[in-house]
Length: 206
Image 1 (tube, helix red, strand yellow):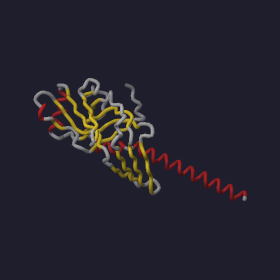
Image 2 (image 1 turned 120 degrees about the horizontal axis):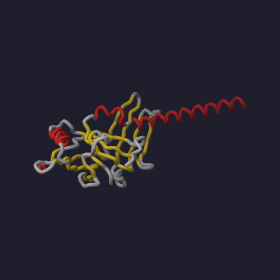
Image 3 (image 1 turned 45 degrees about the vertical axis):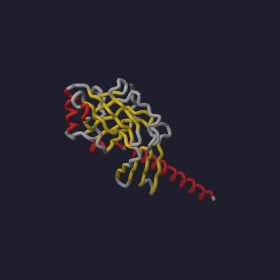
Image 4 (image 1 turned 120 degrees about the vertical axis):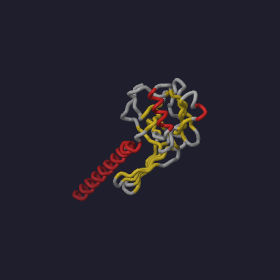
């Protein structure tokens, strides 16, 4: 499946994301957790801009998850850990968010990863997605110093990932959102300049 990474967004959920299921520990390596949390605002500060984003309940109602895969750190250069297509990855949308259950095949790398999850070395999840047309609502205040975005409809969920570098990704996770705000600022500045020019011409010809 070809993915236009220019349109892809990533989000990290600050939750305990993958836990051992005790009842299956002896027979297989099964992990579970939440990759998406609904109605849980996350706020970040960049310079003078305060950005708050929320994924609304219902945002996954029409999402294409038929080919979603489970990855480690969104790395698509290595084999997927599990996938919806063969039944090893199960995705359930509930009142809280998107719950995942994945059965890992018995490989050395998966055993190492599973052990790291058991020991609490890896405890976050992330997801890669695209927004549906008109699938988000933006509001601005204080000359764009306060920005909120409500994601109401996710078009495609490409992967859910177990991540260990969430802190470091935070600097780039919302880059697209901030680019959007910067573009709006530039548009406003251009409109103000055009308005000033029009006023100057009107005064000169009066």
